[in-house]
Length: 269
Image (cartoon, rainbow, N blue to C red; front, side, top):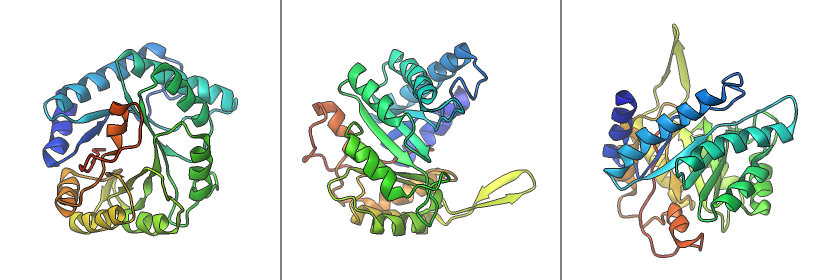
């Protein structure tokens, strides 16, 4: 817990206005059916993030990674629901479903959370390659349009797989007019040396691309794999004074569209 707290605070000091819980793979399928382990993991992760965020007046998001099952979409939803209930028991008000390759179970779980916690703020994010296709062979434009038509998520976007420049290129080709867009690229691309994976993307270059994403209309910006505190710090500096709207504020005003807030939102991975 002390190490996780230290990591959270490094990103908050760098300028993050929101934290994800370290629970990307916490679900019963990954944990071989161990429900109690999932509950304990969620509880510990939420407690660590909430404690750190409270000292910086930052948001905390329940981070839920992709879930797949050979039994089909019904079981996928049931797994999402179990994890979501674990977070709701902790008082979670903000949810991030990230790194998805399809929409299996996402419509059902966003509707479920909306019923259980009407003021919740929900982000659904997809992982696509530079050519715009997810690992399931679905175009980003189709994934986003499908969830947008469903209408239960507050924000939609992309994260992981792509570096900042390629994600920027994808955004420029997307129809995101009127969408609350969330973008979290990787810090470049991985290099594997021995048993370690390194991301050697330049933080200043990363920040420049993030500024361009903001110019394209992205309201929620942050980083995925390889993003260090310095990437967030330089992004915050690059966006200083841009007058960005804080999308998460909508959760505080019963999901009404926001007009008045002028902050940017940054993430830690």
